[in-house]
Image (cartoon, rainbow, N blue to C red):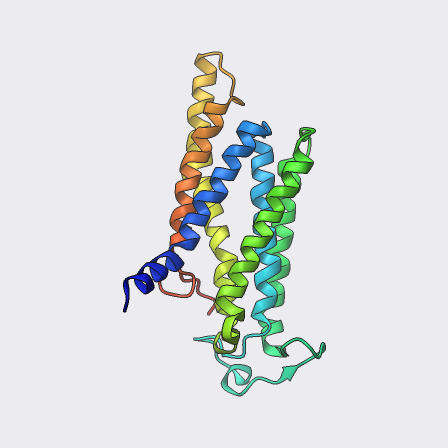
Length: 236
């Protein structure tokens, strides 16, 4: 193997790691340039999670391989294809039954969280333009992941529904880690500081206290390959 092939392989494997850093840096730019507050940052992140759900759950419908560890006639026999749209690959009824409840449940939960986070707050006047740019970047990046992992060389034909669903649950794992190891402890510390010292909790240094550890969590989760044992979600 040549040096160029080795370098290309390393860059390909670490692309999601660097993407996590870049996306978090974009949030920092939003704070500095567009003066986003913590609520607006949370809204952007929840929109990113929703976009991932909308992109990767449909991919699971096109994967013909059985889910490992699932019993029953539906998974022990060849799947029956359904092709409602001629120019798209066929979907499989067993995949629809396996995916639909999880997809609806996740989107409802995300919607409820987003509504509770954004209710009662007035978004800044600069947010719509900057939010559009952020969403466009998220959409392009997630589309590139769908292309790279499932569309190139029609690799979805060698996948099971759990392969794209691993991408779905990776940001939910991120969200859990952020709530437990960043939001809760940092908020508790800042609340104690605000109680003893008159300080502005919406200032840039305070927001960076949240964004810096969040960036490390996103980069770490991004460095794990959802299609290997680095990141594994059990659906059995």
